[in-house]
Image (cartoon, rainbow, N blue to C red; front, side):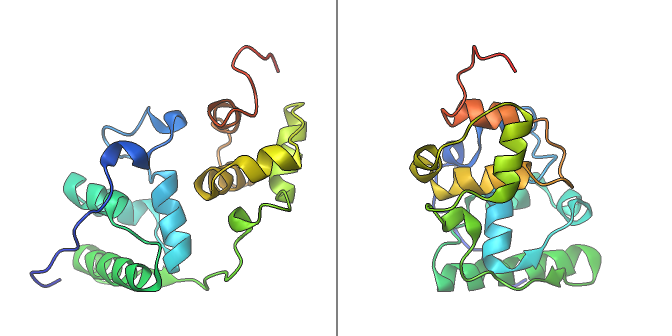
Length: 168
């Protein structure tokens, strides 16, 4: 992995959603913003891989920037080197969507609409467009059938779409 370790750029507290607080201290699960970085850099990181990393390595992956083309390349390379060092094999690489749905302010992802309707929540296009890309990403991931969805409603509350005193 070499001697040069990428340096985190962002403060730790901004890298987690409130609905993730039950595992933030230990980072036993992959945080949403890391999952977004994985989609942005095209690496399929499994929980098995994540569990091989030290707390410091996990925090580095949380805090490393991954927005620009150069940052994505650095993130992917550092992550793949880490996975190889821990498991002996690189993680599967994925195609990177040039127009990911979380960047689309004008079209609510169908999975989000469906999941919101299951909870009797009406999500307007204005509410969707007012969310930042990370919030839209989280709702998309939390609305997928393959994902444990216990955090979908807390995310709606955290993002101001559903008031906390609303009953579902």
